[in-house]
Image (cartoon, rainbow over all chains, first blue to last red):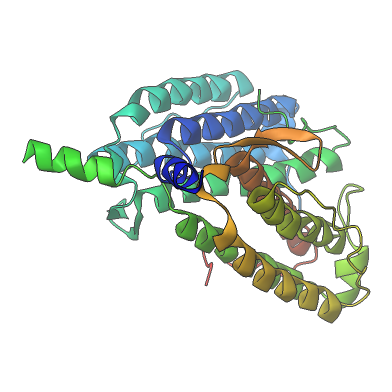
Length: 166
Length: 166
């Protein structure tokens, strides 16, 4: 029994698979999409608390990081997304969001397995492992999305449930 | 060369090791500790925005999840931390924080590798893989800590740098 358990442990010593990490991130991204959609159109572009950036600007930051990070980890080529259009409506922002969802899904399976551990200079500047850079992008989205929850509460709007990633 | 690269890919197909995930989380926890410490004592316990919970209450939620999640994933035994004392000063809260840091470091290496993928009912209620439950705890901390950043900005206090996990 002991040796069987050890063999199982060795076989399943991956903490999380690439597929599960992508699913985890896309679950977060579905929640972020619902937070964008929960804002009244004008508040999405104009409202904030404490002199911070409106949620539309935070959402554009997520978009400028997401696909370029996946592409950079996959290929070693770090390209900025400064050419992304600046949306002026919620519908335009959500369209960009959905396009990024598809691009991430298409690029993700092309990440060579060794690139998760390999250290690289993301965007020519931030030295980190591939997984470190990916987690930074996800964490940055969760961090700023939490700020969007405060904006919504300050507007007396009930935010989407944090635990719902469907 | 191709077969060497494939062999490397197979050997490093772990997206993140248990040790690296612990280091990642403890980096986040060091940042959360700095956010707690950035609040003036009274604001830590009394201030919020939009009718939300003060940051001390959010920090206690992180503590009630952290060690019990690691213990539950390690052992399959899910015990609540409702017996944690309720701190009434910043110093008491930081002491609880530092105790949890040590407990997490001690428990983490006892997690059997297969438990990251194994599905369990966390706290007898939330069905998820071990890694899913751990990531939920980390994400919940990042999410609510981001809200603490808004509280600090609303108080005109510069929050700690998000990227600094030292």
